[in-house]
Structure formats: C-alpha cells, structure tokens
Length: 113
Length: 115
Image (tube, rainbow over the protein chains, first blue to last red):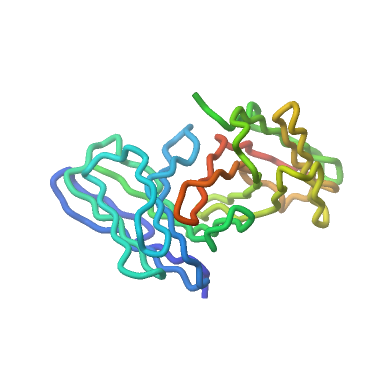
C-alpha cells in the first residue's frame, strides 16, 4: 500500500459546487501539508498541520478550507472555486523534522468549469 | 520573488554521461536542501538531501553538492540512464513553527536521457 493516498485522482466541478479532497497517510507521520501546482509555477504550500493543529496558512483564499481530524487524515474542502483554481493539488506528510523529507501523494487534478 | 530558482527548464543528456542539474537560493535561513523527482501523473518522490553543514552527499549514482557562500546546489547523476528521465525539483527547508518544516520549491528541470 502506498504511503500517501489521495482521492479522487481527478475532479471536474462547476464554480458553485462543493467538493472535498481527501488525503490519507500510513507512514506514522505527525505533519501533513497541502500544496498547489499550477502550470509553469513552482509547488506552492497552502496549509501545514502539525499534530493536527494548523501551523501555516499561506494567504490562501477562504474558498479553500482544510480539515485534519487526526494525524493520518487531511481534507481540503472546496467551495465556490474560480477557473484559476484549476491545478494539481498535492498532499504530503513528514515526521515534522527538517532533516526528514516530505512524502507526497500522487495528487488530485482539479478542473473548474 | 522566487527564493529557490532552477534556471534551466530542460536538459538533454546522452545515456551513460553525467547529468548536472543546478539550483540557486536566496534565503540564508534555509538549513536543509532536498531533490525530488517527478514522473507524469505521479507525485514527487524524494531522491536525496543535504544539510547546510555539509558540502556533499552521495547516494549511489546521485550526488548533491552545496556551495553555501554562493547559495548554490547541484545534483549530479552519473551514469545517466533512460529511466532517470523526469522532472527534478530542488527544494529548501525552513522551520515554520510547532515542529513542522516548510519546503520552498523551484520550478523544476525536465531531464531527458537519450538512449
């Protein structure tokens, strides 16, 4: 079983829809992250959770709402998105130490109509 | 302004030769550097890392060099193999509070190894 699993792999939604992205890690990590990768841009950190507490929110619009119910699960709730939000959304987890690499899921490809 | 820069969007190398991927950074607070490899339709996979107190780390065919004074690091792959063809991301780590670390990524370099 892969270490970090993201569902769904692909999502197409209208601007008025509400949907959620799910991430699950089986690595025993205590920190989880959401990243956005748009075309021709570097991966952008959106949210960081450590020990289920949010520690970073990089000026992300409120139409993105994260939730971390426990150290193994992370959600990204989506509401009233814009076409420019179409991107690859990647989840990652780590032991929360600088020397420990983050492990990524395969991402959810999101398209906003 | 980008804090981590990979100025070469693509690189082509003959199989068996050396691949050198470069990365520059501007923030002197970064204390750990990582390279990730990404195939299409997959998430980035950790490849190799280096602490800011070292200048070289080697793992098999992969070696990362760090020049702190120049704020520059490079990834050497030798010999290059067709399976190494992927996008390589340079990332730098900094502490973001409460025991978690933030990675800042470059835009990536697409490596093509020609058989």
